[in-house]
Length: 272
Image (cartoon, rainbow, N blue to C red; front, side, top):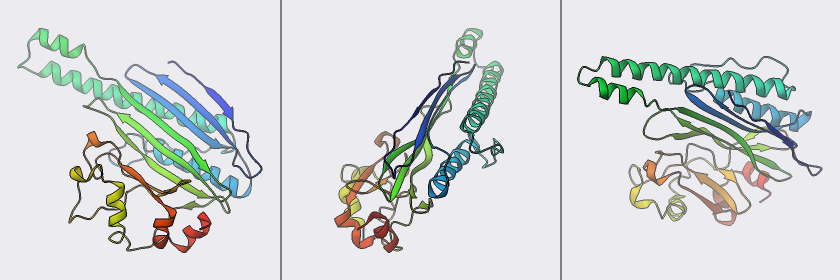
């Protein structure tokens, strides 16, 4: 197993949330795993609540890693949550074991199918058995932006299970209110999707001919909107509204244009 660890603390301004970056890369017999986490340092108050929120993101993703039935694969960390080395080390070790275990089982099943295939010649079986696709799981939670009012993290994982191509998963852009550390998702008022269609169509104008939409209505993304310096950002996952080849369509609506549909809480958070 090859391991690489890099730790670097960001130098904060007085109101900035301190984070430490953890990076690891591991290779096993059948799989490759990488981890990239910007973890807020242990603190009290709102900063501590934001740290807890990031830890919950780690657990919600890695705790159910490659779980196709929705069952927990890795038990939640039960040690001292203020101990970075123990916390990150636990999820890294357990995730590597889980990915390798699933990849090894998949390799055994592939080999069994090939061995039992009566239509293949011994030469064809030998050639097929010589190729076993490696699984890959890249786990990432990165700090994207921060203001005195909020901080945004991006939870985005890449998974490849030996098929035609891999896919992106994760919780997407996650915004925390720095005043109390709570996770903030209440950006848009209810029932505004149809009213936002002109703005959505303009944002997705390069994709319109390929969109998977019902009744001509572009839905809100599964991932929550997120604040940027320019406006409110929206991004769709692969296959959510467009073919895989189109990637992850996204766009930003300037605050001056999206403001009528923002909730009072969102306008307060964004100081609009």
